[in-house]
Image (cartoon, rainbow, N blue to C red; front, side):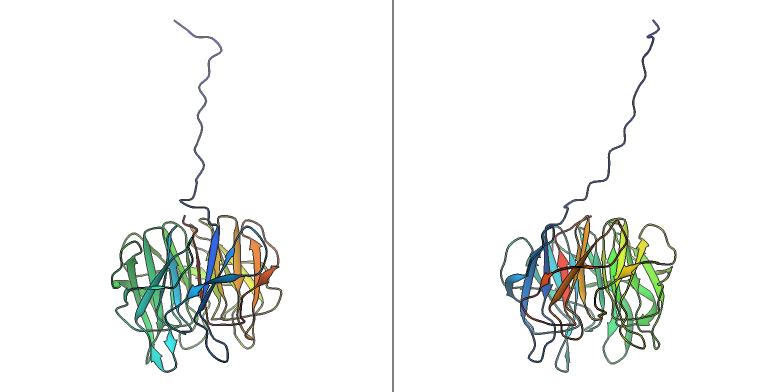
Length: 304
């Protein structure tokens, strides 16, 4: 039997993140006296940060990774002591950090990025630059495991990720670098060249939706106000996104599925700013941290 006028409609299911991202947490950092406090914001609103709890070190230059429920902070430096320790928080509650385990290699000025299950800590400095990449399973407290190597030894490294790929702007490799490299998070192995950022610089902040990654600020011959973006799935050079309201470096950033937020930075500021990730343009004021600081770390409950 022939059915006249019948057509079958095929639809595709849009990608939905594991968790859209509602809360961001800023951790520790430097002022004239050191900061152990953690602050949080609700990403979709505007306003000043509120106290989250205390981090177990008044460290600086550490890195963060996250799942939809847990943030893990690793590495850093306190005075002249370089840390191999990691600690975690449950992002949607408030409270103090809890011991997670130890990195293989103590270091600071390292990068951090993650999928919903695995976090990567990348490069860093301890009596010399490192190219080591370590990984952790975020849901399981344990030490780091060797993943592979970055394309260069580097520190002042900044990293971001989609649900499958981690991308790092290497930062300082003996000279300030414009190089980005990438890994597939679920596997292990050495990094591969991704492309170049628009302006050579180090000590940026990075954040990403599942599709687009942003690099904020940095320093090279002066503080830079540049924001670059990349399409994480496509290795290529970065493209200009806009400018930070006030030029900063040593900031920290995180994202929801729609908004990227960046806070702190030199010169010891409490300013928080944001952009809409899918568009281009300059940052807009969000509010203030509870205390001015730089060389801090940050994460959110956004999981791709």
